[in-house]
Amino acid sequence: MKSNYFITGNAIEELKKLPDGSVDLICTDPPYNLGKDYGNNIDWKQWHEYGQFTLDWLTESKRVLKNDGSLYVFMGVKFISRLFLMLQELGFHFNGWITWHYTQGMGRTKGFSPRHEDILYFTKSDDFTFNNDDVRIPQKYFRERNNMQGANPGDVWEFSHVHYSNPERVKHPTQKPEALMKRIISASSNKGDIVLDPFVGSGTTCVVANFLDRKWIGFDINPEYIEMSENRIKKEINMLDSIDPREDRTPRDLKKFDEAKQASLLLSFAK
Image (cartoon, one colour):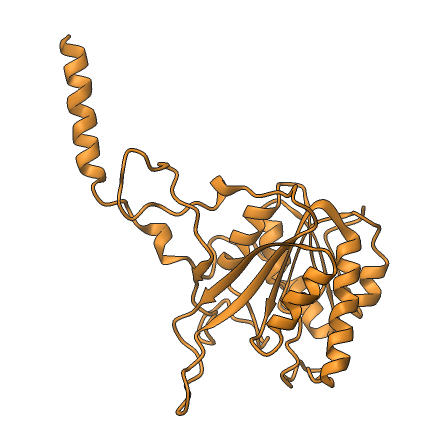
């Protein structure tokens, strides 16, 4: 199937053009229906209209996913519970509710300030791709029984926003961190697989998929965002625009283990 391209168009109509069972991973950040200005359109529908719109693109997404494929959807708090039920009703298999924690955000004077977004992780079947070794996090403490490659990162992730002062920031209101997308794509696809983002926005999903030697497809209704994405994908990524701070840690007590290992080796040589 054709891949590595962007298209300006309606996500539902473009999804209909893809063959059944042709995509390995869908990772997307659709409109949240909060009235956000996306340049050539305002993210606002009546809630029943938004519900039908969501149902339509999810139905097409399930059709184009391979049987071992996965779907990750970012969503705001006002609709995420309904989205969860929709995915179950469509026959997707629930595999995780991920909380993306970020350290800065809008402040509130009444109520608690929001500091997270949610990502729903569903699969098409119980037989799905998951590369645990590709996303492990170094252990906080070393124990011999621990996997030296690290631990599963869990379902609470800490990545900073791509701040407006960041040179990697582009003119898109909801640009997602590259390292966050790297974790999703590394875990739920393999080299050469096709990664689709039907609401590609600033292009981060496809940029990171390309960086990881995956094939990719991106749709967006805004031609300016498609142009933005095309420009980004032409640039070579030397380093990601964010990291999970746990990825740089060295397990505590590792030195004690090294010393014990050396002593054991010396003892075996003496024998």
